[in-house]
Amino acid sequence: MATEVRLPQLGQTMEEATIIDYRIKVGDKVKKGDCIFEVETDKTAIEVESPADGFVRYILAKLGQTLPVGQTVMILAEQDEDVPQSFVDSLRPRVPAAAVETEAGPAPDEIETIEPAGPAAPVQQIELGSTIPLSRRQKIIAERMLRSKREIPCFYLMVKADVTELVEFRHRLNSTSDVKISYNDFVMRALAVGMGKFPIMTGHLAGDAIRLAESINIGLAVSGPSGLVVPVVKDVNKKDIAAIARDSSALIEKADNNRLLLTDLEGACITVSNLGAFGVDSFIPIVVPGQCSILGIGRITDACVPADDDNITVHKLMAMALSVDHRVTNGAYAGQFLDFVRKLLEAPSNLTK
Image (cartoon, rainbow, N blue to C red):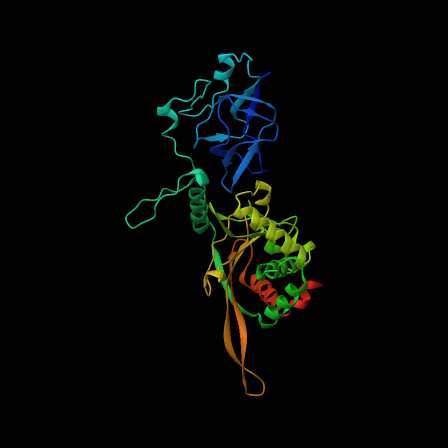
């Protein structure tokens, strides 16, 4: 019996996705669980597995075609099974320019002109005067950031945390820990503790009310092979530093290999963006729609600070900039929150309790 391979819903908010790669061709035998095609959502690229054993008899969507969840992408059947053409025609994507690949193969003028999207696209030479097309994900990010700047009235709070003790404390922990702990892990832990004390910072505007998050999940901006992604560490307030480090490391590895699932990218109530590794002293990030704030982290710099005995000591300072949706909270509340987070980072032993 013929099996329809439909575009699955791979996350709670997923409504559609774009076909960016086929791992099979018509006539191939596949087994249940084999990776058969790859899609790109507004957040990440995801591999789709075959729901059954069988032979690929028809492929109904072109590379680069965007389909709604539930749309049939291909048909599997037994090698000699008769699949009525009327059945195939009834399953064609109800969008413009749908292509059908049959046992005779695709028409060259239909398939070869379709450029794969996202990571399946060929690498383009970047040079002066060239025109670089945006991927679907880049377009969506651009639309969301434009929406944020237009609709979210933000204010910005900047502080410098004295992380002299944190630098030494992290070094001591990493000398004995079975997982490498990053500065981001400490920042996320401090934010989670702070949001527990200042819960409005977990909220977002929902109609005429502020809806607070049910759990403290923190997004971490990561530059992956296909561009910016923001995997989410879940329930940060319930985890110690080592557990946060394990989760964030696993998510970064998945991002580096284009293996993030939609569930890895959902549910954040705040985002951390750290550009310190690129030599950036400080910057003001843009709030992600649906969140109250985003924290921008700069590099750790040395500064000469007068001591009580009139001597000069060298301290390590880290610049932090918090962008906040003024519709959700005010400067006094957000300022107390940021100051609390700063003090936690300046006394890192409190973050391990």
